[in-house]
Length: 118
Image (cartoon, rainbow, N blue to C red):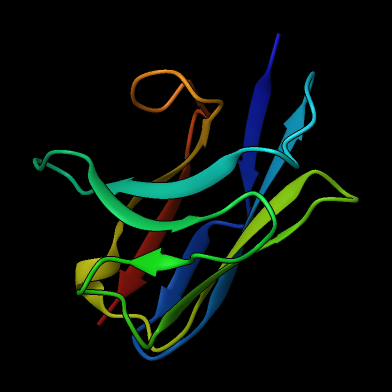
């Protein structure tokens, strides 16, 4: 059983920074793509960032490019999302997901709430 557990969310003022972590257990994540998604109140879940198995091929949503950085430490089975210059529009529940090769994303965490105050 694969489990993804996000942490690092919280309340931050606009312009501030947070780093989210996603710990993967039950199956090594080192051969699989990992991603971050978010869902704001009243909106659908949207893609934020993805990173390849070895840490390359990072891609970002246009709305976060230049402000967010995705990274991974395969030795720790952990993926990170460094979020800088946060805006109130970044307020959302952030979810980690793992792509083990099936259609779509195979596993999801339960999310961590990020609230950005103006």
